[in-house]
Image (cartoon, rainbow over all chains, first blue to last red; front, top):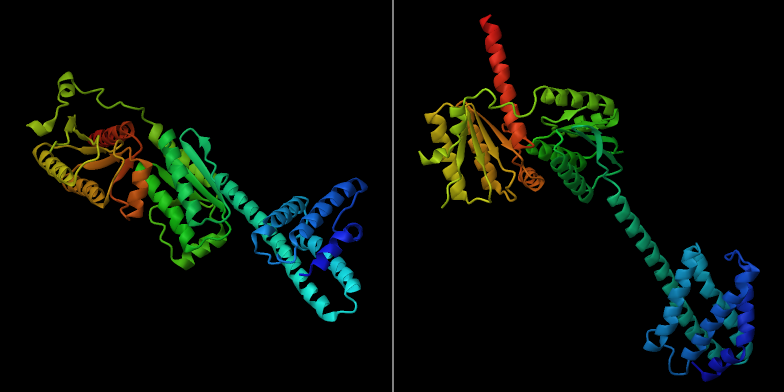
Length: 302
Length: 129
């Protein structure tokens, strides 16, 4: 890049800034308020100063280390704009609107020398394009971050264990189940059974929109594991659609109890609990004689 | 190699596995139980594995074997206090043990047999009348 161009930008700084500010104000991307003006002006002034500092006849390669502060500045601007609720297009226009202004300036300066004009425009265009793509990158990265965080939050909040009754746990499942979530549901439920010592767990899948073989497998595995621990699992909230899917996919439910609605499931659970609590705990040995009680010995030794 | 103690309570056998055990210990246990069941008439076997934190396919098979052996010899087996991690492992291994009764705790296992025996006594009583 010719040093004349850099000098030109430095010389006409004020003019460029005014025009740029004007364009930004007029483009409806800013819900512009007068109080914002000095702030915005400072921001673009800093940006232009940094740009003209970096542009020397030798450095016009955007990948050179000299450009790092400028790139950082662009990232900051993009992040600020994203926080203000700008779309990707709006953020990018922020930088691209400068392009037009600079080109007009060059056009006036090199009116008589077409070759130089093309060369200079080419270099400047490359730099501004590069800065524009940084804005896009930053925008996308910010969004990705938000999506990642929300996904994590969703996962954490997704498995509430409810104490329905003394002896009955409830697990409402909402949304889709992938293997990560299924693992989490299994862990949470089994640990809850272990902690509470409750006999019945009701898994309610009325909030599960679609059931495929993998999802069904996950739920049945959880039920099987709960059974191994000695608890009974009831699957409730099986909608007509899901019932048909189960039949069509030929899913083997095995011994698992399934119910159409939560109320039916609670009814069944209460019956199971009632059956278990009819007799009181540890009656065994009440009628055995003292001699019998003494016989608790290690039989391996005889 | 230490033997796993098998305790007699009335007409029940109680085996409490307190540590992670070796395969040979498991096989020995299986033998012991079979011998005891043959010599005395026990009605039930309780296998308490609440302290067992690691289980492999072999151990799962041993538990299954003990249950089947007791069933053949006229006693029912209840596995009590299985840890969540163990349950998950067994399910992942495909060892769902459909013939084995499981309970959450030793207390509930004893309660189960208690009820079962009471029920049987009631039935005997009514049939005599």
